Image (cartoon, rainbow, N blue to C red; front, side, top):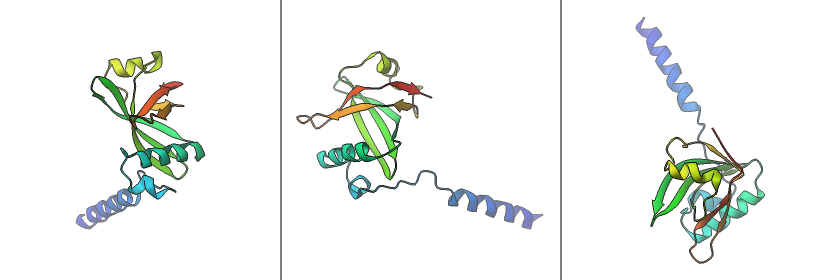
Length: 135
């Protein structure tokens, strides 16, 4: 009986460690080794998003800085895996509920066709809009 338990535990551990869903693969080494708050990282990220196919962006967190709502997002695509923080200076009706609830209940939701740009003065990503928020 002990041998059966040992074999079962070993098999489960092997299955869990061999299955790495969160593996992050980037074609651009800057996105793997760079810091997400630098201008170079942000410019490279925008280039990669434009070039990648099947990009999905999910909400990973919410915070406010100087009263400005900020969305922390995870970005995945073909050979693209990155993080970004997007300031919402002009909220629209679609993102208003996320802000009103300070992101609570929206973690890991898909931000369908999230659009954002890089402000050349502040070096912040700025929210431009989103088509839909999907669970």
